[in-house]
Image 1 (cartoon, rainbow, N blue to C red):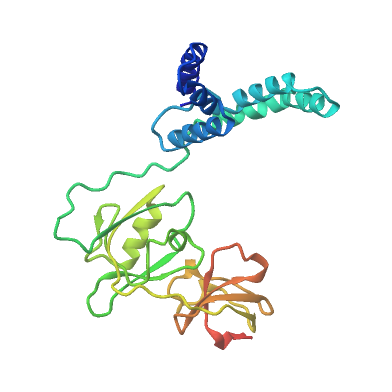
Image 2 (image 1 turned 180 degrees about the horizontal axis):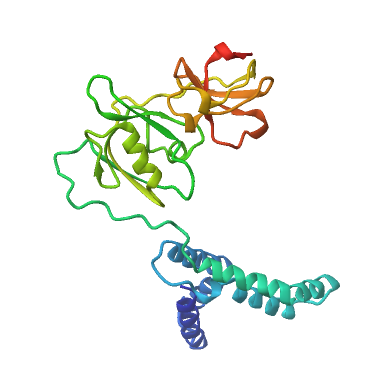
Length: 283
C-alpha cells in the first residue's frame, strides 16, 4: 500500500547514504509517480471489493486538501490562485463532505437468504429474487391447459422482470415467497404478488427452450379508442395499454398473434403494455 511504500522509502533513504549496491535504483523506483498511482488504484480496488476499510486518501475531502497543498507549492499564477480559491470555497467543501458521507453507505437492496431445504435432485430448479421498489412486476401468468401448472405467460417489454433477465415466458412457478402455487388459481397467485412488498422470491422450473427475440419494431396509428379495463377478452387488464384514435404506437413484441406489446411514441421510456393486434391498427 502507499503507507507501506512510504515506510520502505524512509528505510531506503538511510541505506542510500551508506551507498549499498542497488538501493539507489530501488529508491527511485518506489518514489516514481506511476508506481504511486498504481498503488492508489490497488487501494481503490481493495476498498470496492470490500476487503478493507476506505483509506483516508480516497476520501474526497482528503484529496481536496492534498491538491490544495500541491497548488501552494506550485509556481503561482492567476489560474492557480483561482483554482485554490475554488477548492477552498465552503460550498465545494460541503459538496465533498456530502460525497464522502454517501460513498460510505450501502444502498444495495438486502436480499433474503436462499432456502436451506432445496433437494439436491432438483437440478432444474431456479431461485429468483426480484426487488419491486414500488414497480409492477411486468409479467403475466396463466394456467397450462393440459398440466394445470402455473406458468409465466409473457414478460412485458421494459418491465422489472424483463430488465432482470431472470424470468421467461414458459417458466413454471413452483413457489412464490415460500407459498406453493400447486392447486392455486392464477388470481390467487396474482394476489400473493400484489401483496408482496420489497423482495419477491420465485422458485421455478425454467422453460427448456428460452424464446429468442428477433422482433422488428413497427410504428402504427390507432384506428379506434381502446380501454383495457373495458375489454373482457384481454388476458390481464392491468397490463393493458389504453390509447386513443390517432395516437402513434411503437410495437415492440408480436409473439402473441392476438395481443401485441406496445408503448406510446409520446412516452417511449415507459413500460410496454398489451394491446389487441392489428385489426384495430394501421401502419
